[in-house]
Length: 126
Image (cartoon, rainbow, N blue to C red; front, side, top):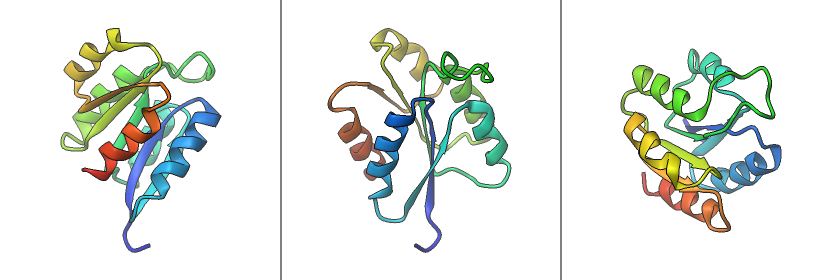
């Protein structure tokens, strides 16, 4: 793989992160880097620039070391990489969608039986 485009995936659910990673790694010239928290992602951003960022909304319940939710991650990411597309994928429902889009998300997906294919299609069309 020559100069892969890095997908930063921030998801604290191990099973979902494996599903998303396997799906997105099947795209040509993409490599998924999985992070369990926003803090972990920002640490790696110092060395690697993402092509796209995908984040869950609710990151802290299963990861007590994380104090950052997906909305804060979006806001901070846009300050650093203004033109990097960001998708929020969440099971919280559409009530969080307006806030995510207002904070800088470019795409919003509710977790359901079609979320993996929607995510794949969105990244593939970038």
